[in-house]
Length: 167
Image (cartoon, rainbow, N blue to C red; front, side, top):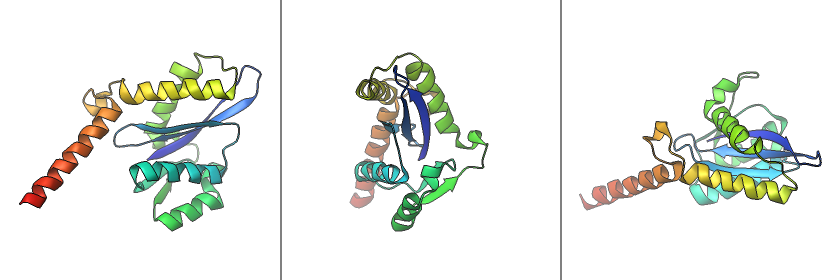
């Protein structure tokens, strides 16, 4: 799993941030959290929501932002046993999946809309995320959308477990 922050502004000039979370295996965007403030505690809260749906990741990759090196995040890693890998400062290419995703989000969504409110930004960004996950084919996934790839991988895993149980 990789995560990173992106910033943008509403039409009135008020800044907001996005916490983007990507499954590195399936390329699925697990979350685009939009808010004016995203603390380390909020990052942990969102990671717990994702973990309830998908299970804990083996590893999280991110930069060294203050929210991501906070006591709350470090305590979460210790409590859950999740390894957190911080990329080298000034080396965004070490988190390539995330940087590619952020570029697409910026080009295809953030630069295309003038957000009048935080609620409007959330709605538009969530619609873009749904399209990214369910419609858009990815070459690295054999032309499948991330959600289809995830479902196929889970189904294949269940079949393998059933075959092993029957043997």
